[in-house]
Each structure stands twice: as C-alpha cells, then as structure tokens.
Length: 374
Image (cartoon, rainbow, N blue to C red; front, side, top):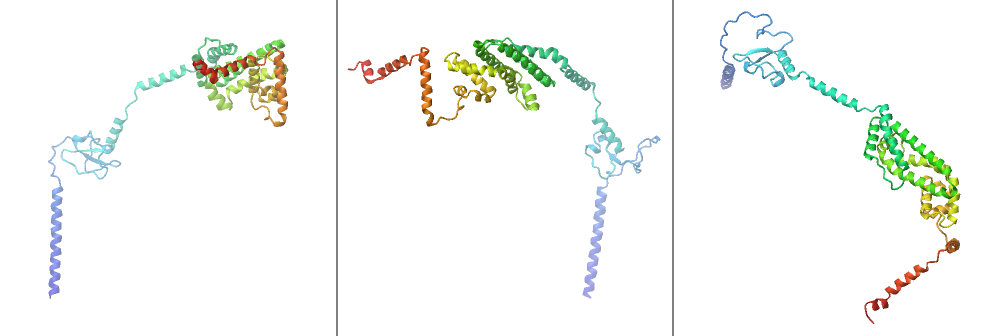
C-alpha cells in the first residue's frame, strides 16, 4: 500500500515539473517576440522588378533584412553575420545580398586616373634619353678616354696634366652601365699596344751608350702611367675584367709591356747591364736598381740570366752562404776595393778622422775640460 502511494506521489511531482517547465518556456518565448508591426498603408502596384515578397525567396539569392538607417553603412563584407537572416524589425526593408556585394565592389575599385599613365610615360622617356648607343660611344665617350690615355702615357715624372679625372671616371662608369665594357676594354688594349710598339722602335734606334738610360725612362714612364690608368678604369676592371675574364687590369697592362718591349730587348739589354756592372759608376746605381727590379717584376725567370746581378738589388736570389766559400767572398770584396781605388776613391780617411774626433769629444777628459774641471 505504502509503495503504491509513493509511486503516485512521484508521478504527480513529475507531471507538475513538466507543466511548470512548459509554462516557463512559453513565457520566455512571448518575452523574446517583438511587438507586432503596425499595418502598412496600401501601396500602388509595382512592376515585377520591385523588391520581392519577404516570404518568398528567389532562386540563387539569399534574403537579408537590414534596418533602413543602416542600409548604406552595412553589408555582408562589412561585419554583418553570414548565418540565418534575423527577424524583420519595424520599418525594415529587404535587400538582396548580391546587390550589396556589387555596391561594395564598385565602391572599392576606383577608376584609374590619367596622371599615373603620364608619370609612367615620362619615366620611360627619361630612361630612353639616357641610353648610350655604340655610335655615341665611338663619337663622344671614347675620344675623351683616348686623349686622356695619350697624355698619361707620354707624361714625364712630376709633370702636371690638365685633365679631369672625375670626368674620365664618369665616362668609364656610364659606358660600363650601358654594356660597352667589352668594346672599351678592346679599345684600351689596342691603344696601349700601339703606344708600346712605338716605344720599342725608338729603343731599337738608340745607340749603345744611351740604350740603358732610355730603357729605364721607358719603363719608369709606363709604370707611372699605370698608377693613373688603372684607377680610372677600376669600374670596368671590377664588373667586367675580374667578373667575366677572371683577370686583373694591371696584370694585363704589365703583360703588354713584357710582350711588346721587354722580351724584344732583353737579349740586347742584359749584356750591357753586365758590362756596366763590371765598370763601377758607368751607370748610376739608381738606374741600375730600377731596371733590375723592373725586369724581375715583369718576369722573375730572367733572374737565371744573371743571378749575381739580380742578387745585388733583390734579396734571397742566391742560395745562402756556406762557410767553405767565405774566402771567395773576401776575395770579391778586396777586388771591388782595388777597383774603387783605381778610379780615384780613397779608403775613407775622412770618415775615420771624423769618427776619431767624435771619440775624442765624447771621452771623459774632453767632457771634463769642456766643463772647466782640471
């Protein structure tokens, strides 16, 4: 009996809970529902292209309800949710999603202005005006370089040349930028080769007593010119010779002197140098040193032609001295001293006398007498 009463009580409580829950949901739904919209006044008939009935959805388009005040400010791309459409509000209108997308695209893509086209054409014309053709290079730029190279190759040491190094460097820079490096390098090599061939012919016509001196002048003049020519063409050297030819401009120009001058005269020059070495001061020591060092720079293999001569001006040419050859070295020094005496040079008596006076002046007794001590 008690069990049946408990079951009836539980069933009654469940029914009451269910009824209360339904009443609460109905109240909540009625609270969420907006008030009914007032009836609209009668409207005249519209054509078929007007806004469709809110209850009917056209194929291919999604209906979206927006407030009339926010019609121009909001569209799906500007922040409205893309889920199910919200309930219509009072005084609301219905718009198609596609029309809002089209308006947004039209507003975001402005038409091109003619000023941008004018700027592009102007920049293009400026670029075309700066182009250096091969005719411009041959008629304007290379003649300037040719004249400057002539002056540098024929100048004497210490002479002032009235040329603008900035202008020459600017010509080289522009020609390299306009893809004329290969032609400019070829013209430079031809120019210097022609000059060295003239120098070689002049040396061949020199008498023996002036041959060494004139060779020294030609060598020094050319090496001095390279100190100015190489920096002027440094842009061509960096972006064409080193990059594409894998060489260096200075090495190429030194090789030109070796091939067109030194190789043609080395077998005539070396006997004269050996003869001048045997006769002291027939050639000034500075001239002899310049030629020997220059020949070693041009081609170190030429040391084998006269190792003793090169060893007097360049260190570490001969093998190191050994004890068994000390007597031979002493005999060579004595022979040199006798030759100097025969040519009128004394053995340094004045230097010994000067050294003795200095010793006497620095002695303790001399210092005491100079200070007045007895």
